[in-house]
Image (cartoon, rainbow, N blue to C red; front, side, top):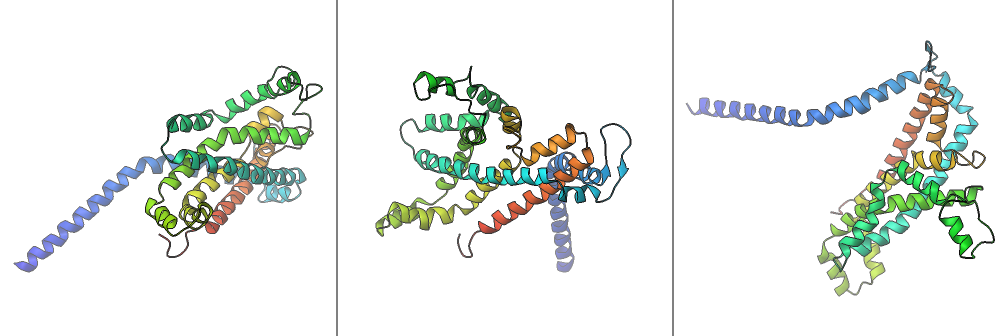
Length: 306
């Protein structure tokens, strides 16, 4: 009788476990469906298109790896990729240089803290296309704000076109992106700062550790995961930069600000070489995944650090 009861109990336990597993599967099915429809299937279609000569109109033909071989000879793409990496490095440093001090400033409750948080985060709500249109007006040499204001204040002898040469145009884009993104990165870093136990900071103060020593020995190690998230989002967004360069600069001056995504757009929807554009997209995807894995490895949590 006891053996039968134990067998029945194990059967009920297995049934309950299976039921919980099926319930869990039902909960994640909507997310799986969304990922499948909006990521897996488009990714598969892009990979398939990259193996074809796929014009916008007419029949497509299978060409194998010819599109990928053509990429090796595409100097314009490699120059665009080089500029994209340069832009990514500069803008990521600039974003963190602004976002980290802001995160430290708004972390602790103080008068008007909520107002500061809202004000700093507000530009992140604006879409990149809208922000680019706004800054396109601000940077206009005649009807904008910056150049006429500098001229009226006597800072320049004449109205300066900030978009006419590479350096002013490039740094104008950097300023726009930092204004747009720093508040979002600030919120991510602030959550990491608030997750650090206050007891550790107080113990370090009692031991005589200064602000820099506490930041180096406590804050940075315990924020590795937060930093990894913020860094990956920043790098990925920078490598995929398109709106600001297309709307404000149109790749100028003299095609010096062509990004990788801009060149993919040009090949796909200007030259109508959809197969080649798909191959370029797959190459950029591989580069982006590799960079993300390297960042995760560099910022992995050390053994034994909880």
